[in-house]
Amino acid sequence: MPTFPLSTMDRLIRKACNTRVSRSAALELNAVLEAIGKKISEEAIRLAKHRGAKTVMDIDIKAAIKLCELDKMR
Image 1 (tube, rainbow, N blue to C red):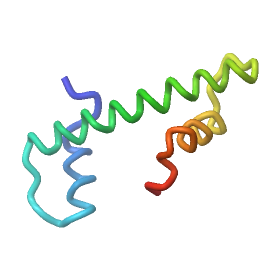
Image 2: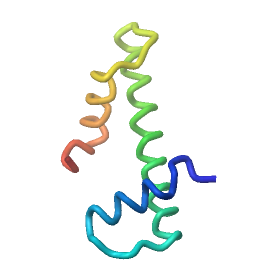
Image 3: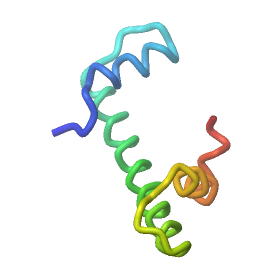
Image 4: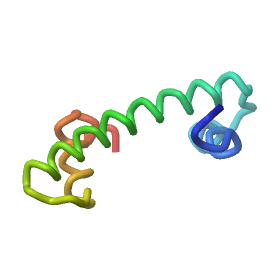
């Protein structure tokens, strides 16, 4: 079961290249984004715990993105 709606994945792909999108392409993008999101979340939780916080904040997510070297994708 996909984590994100497939229509959202379809829209993301079509924004990048205005073309038709197969269900398998939408499913694959969903799996990749879920894996990246999990990696960022785990790192953000670790950072929040390190600073003694119980709540993950935007600064934790931003720092986790940098640590995972995903900030270059923006």
